Length: 377
Image (cartoon, rainbow, N blue to C red):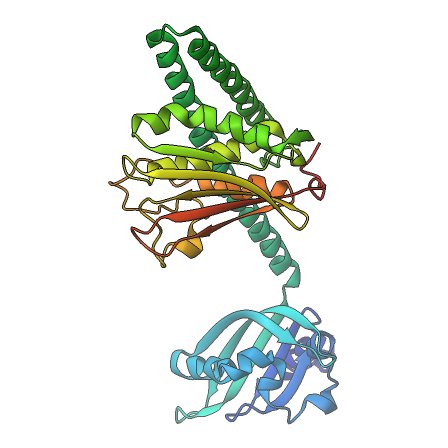
């Protein structure tokens, strides 16, 4: 066989470099200018060889990475360590981006000075997409885990509230010989048993569905009647601290469209909060009125008040209005009120002049009923 049929080694290398379509092969001079544009470089970046020659290496980087100086950093690492491996977004001629996995190696002269650099780069956008998808799933899982944790925290808090009311009612029934008093206490027990049932329904729903937020069972209500029930349910707790609870409501009924059990949760949480943060012998005032198209409930107390630092965060989960050792509780109740008020199309606010100066909590519900959402059924 004629030896002339076998191309020289240099020709083979040139051929392989020019036809390596999967890898972009870029040769740079010491200053970072492109001097050779081989393999899949044109396919990857969209520049013809004529357009690419003389182009600065940084033109292949995103504007954010150029502002950080990462194109020069890659060359500096290669010069110091012989090579630099990088996975990052790169920019094509048309401005679109792809995720490139590459290796930049320094090429040295015989005297050890830098002759230039050779970059071998492969498009791995497929891998980056898979990683992003996995990260999104992990983030979604973490968010769901956090939401579940908050749900179970609020469920435990509400269950303790209900059990406390039931315990108080049981104590009244056992200690009192007055039939009317015993009957009222039995009614409290009956209402709280219904609340327990709703909380267990919430638990079942959370285990079955991705959405663990409470669902509403809406119906027509008279606000004054709901306030009287809440005041009756909290009465024993208030009396144990020798506090005075006064209820002031207008004589004309205020009709609202709400979930009766959820409304009781909100009212009892607000009243219980007022009682816990009000000293023995203090005063709590429960009022109702109408402002424009909203039914407005206010719970005013002359208790410990709320510091200016805590006030903006008072409805966040686990926020406490007093040092943890001063008042029992987990900082969940007010977060529950905020969520339920929002689901009803209303809201809740808090005001306080400062520590030791009492507080006012305002619950607002639309007169015409909530702006229905997928949380209502």
